[in-house]
Image 1 (cartoon, helix red, strand yellow):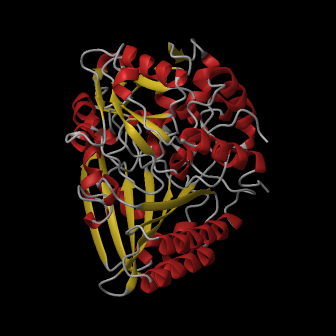
Image 2 (cartoon, one colour):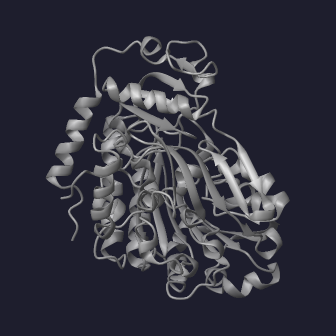
Length: 496
């Protein structure tokens, strides 16, 4: 059984928090101004255009705090900021699309290196290559990839940054047909802790490239990345089926989901979402089916869910780029969905599973519904995403630092509410208990979690697995011995 956080990990995290805090804000203009290019900007929270010029943060839960932001315009600017920060013991965080939500970020009190100027897209369809700046998000690529007849694994939120998601793994609805996004990464240009600009690939700094593919947030600031592409599957079309159920059907739905534990077509993804409807005072469930095949064939592959008696069925066949706007009755992934609304107070937990236990899941569903009834203003949901794993497993486990290729489903517990310490403590207890209950029958003999979904309390052996952690700590000592890049799911210098 893994210990979620060792004493050493807790101690080093506490020391990092103390070291990152200072009672006096530094003069960023005096420190950083000399050496920046003309297009680079230094922006203070007191500046009237601060919120307009800086990429807004999606989540305010356990958010970092900043003296101000520096918006570099060139790689040399990023190098300069890293060097000056290291020389003056100023903590920093490089941000792309502002979607990192782990609680480990709360330890940062320093500066934001806003990569908002790094949004270039260079698509070479003939050679199946895509090079992007460090702050490009998924939705920016929809049109150019679609026009070129190409695909790349994306996550289930179109607002997330491609690079940040990919160096963690990128799981999502395209995983069954394409595999993980991290496996499409060919090379990166990054600024290291020494301020050097280096390239990492399978032939250059290969050890570092191994670590970047799964734990890349720990080794530098990626200013550009190159991916290889996949030709469109099914002519670039998918069928999205939304099935709506009353909360009373939850165990039946989970029993239907269990039938896919050992056998699921690569073309099929199942997204099961449960929530509390404050208007009706009851729980509800939505199953979104994603099928990369002929529409007329989808029905035969989802018979267990049809037999569960949905009260509504919404089926649409669209370009793969349109799934984000048609799925889940517009309630979870529409243009106004919470995943694309900035400035929320969003608390989430997650874990990986290989087995579906309907009894345990039904109990968790009941507990979340009852908690929601008792706490008006608490908007919670409970999701299970079943992604086919065959293509993911076709890449050898040792190829990258990504930890859990044998995962079958991603489980998430999510909530948003107005900041309230009492409710926050209660919500944490609710979700921690739910996570433990599901983990006990997960098929893993320890807690396993996709690091980009992690709450932050799990510790490095859970984020990266003990199997990968020895090599990651060695790379950390080599490339970031002063732990400058240690605010997002940090790899320690030594473990345990």
